[in-house]
Image (cartoon, rainbow, N blue to C red):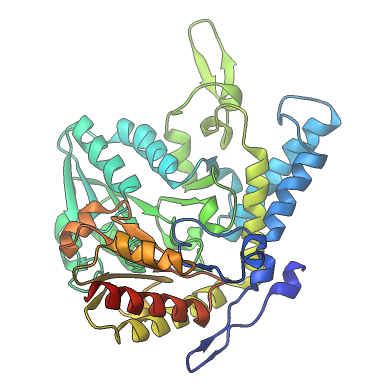
Length: 420
């Protein structure tokens, strides 16, 4: 089925919520109609157009880019740069050379801390993160602060799982060199008010703002040039693209001033016996042979989502979250963590009294329902929730009310089994 034919309208009538994209557009889901895949926050299923783009690249244009004058190498080079332009357009970045392809959000955060952080953060400076940050951000800045002798501060959360903006404001001052925060919490689904946070930080400091967009880009419209942050990172596999590809967006002035963080390949300009000069953006930060095939796949995923419309995607997810939260509230002994549905993306985390989340996940798996159970790489957040782990259901473009029904039925069965 073609992409356009697979796109449906999001309609909500009572407990009926249609997907914004047909399961037929996703080969894995189409092959298993009984599967209820509710772990899209961990990784999304891949639309056929992405798989087709990957195959087409390797069958028609595979060669090492930037290194050959022959036709195939030129085709690979053109495919790589076209992919960069398409991804940049999807996330609202006009200067496409300021989009760096990386392996994912984790590598992007390590690039920022390892390059900008080591060059600009020192003793006496302060680094601020939030208690809901994913380990990829939290640990990267924690370790940078320790290595550089800076003070590491954590903005706490409100009781309903949002960043406490008053506490954040109290932490930011003239010594603050960086403020890092997630666009969307991977564990709670909380959508943070990015522009409000940017305004708060800019009023009080000259800090660099770093936003983890791993859970933002797959679910919300993102316009980097209007958000006001300095760096923004996301992973390709969470937007329906391949694993092993992602992007770091940055302000040109910051990127040009930063030293490279890896060496080799096209990141050089001139190599002398004792000194080396660096290539222009984006090549300075893309050492080694580029991951062209996955960049092409990521661009296809971005085109697919653009065709659905990101406003429709988030409206669909919130409809499902409202439905899921209403149904879960009917289950005795079950606690849903996080804010109201209109302040979330498609994530619902919950705990059932005296039943470990891993047991819930196992019972649900026996019914064909895939959820995530654990600390979600957010142990500081789990401590603040007072739990070692949660169960997490995460919805995306192919999810529907039937998935919610299967989730609730499975949890009711678990409650009866454990007498919770």
